[in-house]
Length: 143
Image (cartoon, rainbow, N blue to C red; front, top):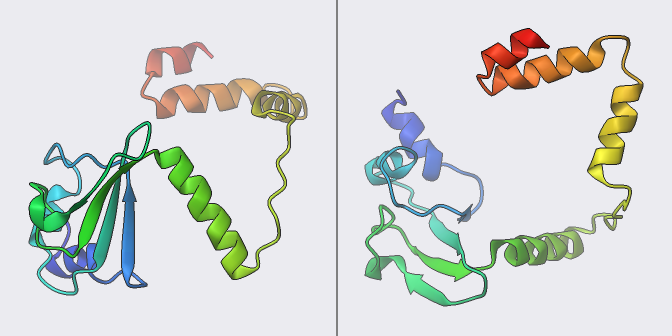
């Protein structure tokens, strides 16, 4: 259970002036909704990006039925993949980061190369840990 200070810090004490939340639907009370409702101070501007295949709307929180109703900000329905790529490219340009170079090798080839360099039995250990992490205990034991 989070303390009152931790709850206020979760959305009020973040660094910067704005918070971007991707892919949150506001459709349940099992995740951040209770925390959002309980923050009483330092409410940052929030931009909630909900996935849509194409840009479709911008809605002010004051006109929405979300837990963010009392925050400054907007719900934007847009393609989150495109949004993240655009945001990333702007951050790269603004902060003079080196250009990202894409490797076309593919993740499966990289993982296979990595597994081949493991000591004997190492691949079984890793696969067992993955199954264990997924709560597939019966499969983890078989490995």
